[in-house]
Image (cartoon, rainbow, N blue to C red; front, side, top):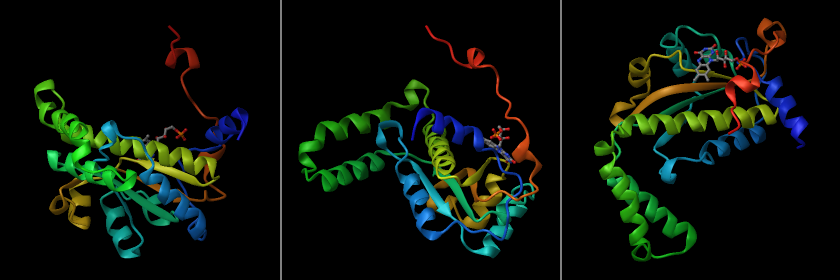
Length: 214
Ligand SMILES: Cc1cc2nc3c(=O)[nH]c(=O)nc-3n(C[C@H](O)[C@H](O)[C@H](O)COP(=O)(O)O)c2cc1C
């Protein structure tokens, strides 16, 4: 993809307000977007977020009720709920170290220094004013951003949404029992032919107002 093609796609994307409910993302394309969810970077690589792909129509109807009745929740081809851990402990560091050992063929013992560094971050965070639940939520938003960019590059429409009631999502999906809280969702699919937002000029502050070269 050339630089110009990338900018064209990012200009093409918009927060889709009205999806075509008759169009579904083909499974082979969806499976790519699902893989993207796990390829997002995260602080220390700790991945304190979890994504739920909601396929059940009844669950989507109930989630729409706790999403300001926004139609994208039920009309889009796919719905992803981005959640993050409400409690981050050194157990997450241990799980990551085990996974690193498994993927890279190393022993857990040889990763002791790495494990201590990760655990040190988790244990020392409160004293540094880092609230780990909020830190975890921020990682979920990074995953949302990566997902949106990937969808745009694949010519798939999407809408990021935080107009949701986290308590309602908790009730429908049983999140707190899993130690999770919902932050935002992404709906993905194809724009309806009559979504008037699709043709509105994109509004951004001027480049120099947002980006400063020092
Ligand atoms: C974190 C986040 C939450 C958003 N929540 C909603 C939402 O609940 N409903 C909605 O229709 N759009 C929502 N949007 C879309 C924004 O309004 C939209 O991205 C912004 O106006 C810029 O327009 P564009 O994305 O079409 O370029 C959200 C966007 C972000 C990044």
